[in-house]
Amino acid sequence: MTDSTQKKITDAEWEVMRVVWTNGKATSREIISVLQEKMDWKQATVKTLIGRLVDKGLLATEPIGNKFIYSANVSEQESVGGATEDLLAHVCTKKVGSTIAELIERATLSHADVAFLEKVIAAKKLTAVDEVKCMCTPGQCNCKQTGCVHEGE
Image 1 (cartoon, helix red, strand yellow):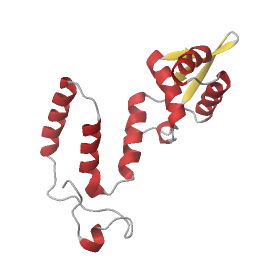
Image 2 (cartoon, helix red, strand yellow; image 1 turned 45 degrees about the vertical axis):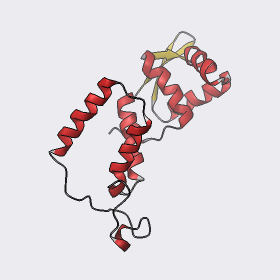
Image 3 (cartoon, one colour; image 1 turned 30 degrees about the horizontal axis):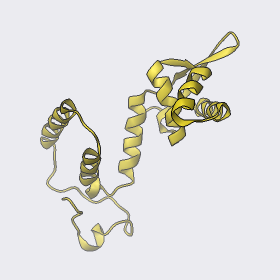
Image 4 (cartoon, helix red, strand yellow; image 1 turned 60 degrees about the vertical axis):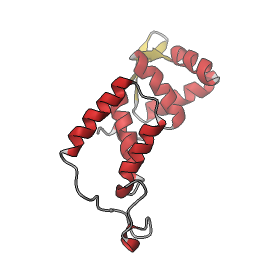
């Protein structure tokens, strides 16, 4: 993971980044246009978010005439990977499987998505362990106190 992906992207900043990722490059006017339609945000709000992303090093600016062209310094895939790591870091290691299952249950998936997930699961079976060890600090879960097995396992 690059240094840029370690910087947190807020929910509002994700909206800006999605516009830039989709277009490859975008002017503030293009970003504002999309987000005014989707989120009903004011121009000043979008410009503030763009400025924060530039300050975080997540957006690059290229001056062209009297405007700036913005491009992403981090890929969508890297950012999603970082967000996934953040989510899993907040969950007891014994609950990771049930957390992933919940994500799958909540998601709308195509047949192709399901087939891909089946391949990932089949490959994961080759390296699966008999028991996942709890890595929590005592007091953050009940594993070390009761030797519990979490729901869904």
